[in-house]
Length: 335
Image (tube, rainbow, N blue to C red; front, side, top):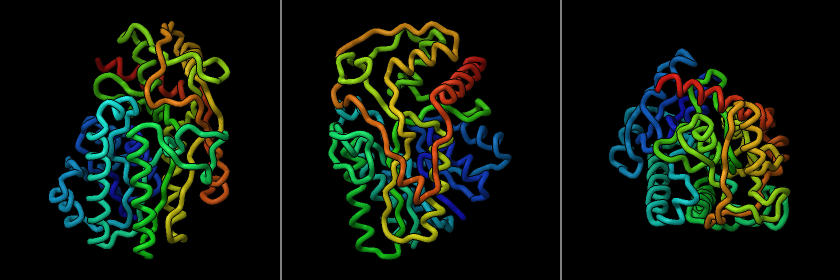
């Protein structure tokens, strides 16, 4: 299968590209390198032995994006490209709506024009808002607490309408929980440009001495230790979920929603303490006030993905953080 992966040099995108190539697919990547670097293409080649075709294009530029569709025959699109930081979205909501909605609309319009009928969308557990009942399943009420989540939910609604209007379109909406970890090679992992917005890469930089301490946003939530609880999932488990979703779309038209998570909730302090254990480093932290847009707890009921996609997360928190630390050490050797 020939697959266009948007945001394919990013954290989730790059790991999914590796698994797609391993599964025998031909991959084309488009990325504007806003939150990634071009050397990821070389690293993917080192891991897989295959050189992927790469376009450095901003998907908000429809004319340039159309070049990809003109020059390539594609069967499917996996759409990762988008801004993704909850805190930043609260400060810059218009930037998030402009980027995430326009880029997605451009891709979908070109898919319709060029008769590409399979679409896997990188959605998020943020579409469930502040859940009343845990664990969260796909029938849980949808609501949002921040502009990032709202942009994802708006795109889900657009996809629902597109599915109704176009019976040939096959759409998979994958609602991720919290991806962490790295490829076992230590070559690719989460290494954001600038100050990390996500917890684990920030903890990694404290472990290596780049930062003095981790800010823990709130210790007064209704959780086991007062800090926020999330469902952390190994990045390779998550990447494999996309292979399963593509396989499912071969036999199923319409739009389909699946949670990708482990079903286990871990607190911020669980992350810090487990990272201490695997890295053998002291990780200082400071409790600060809650962050706007955050919720107390969020973890998945992944039963539907198991039953329909035949997908199950296999790695535990220690596995995730050991692979993160391996990747972090590799990055440090190069600096």
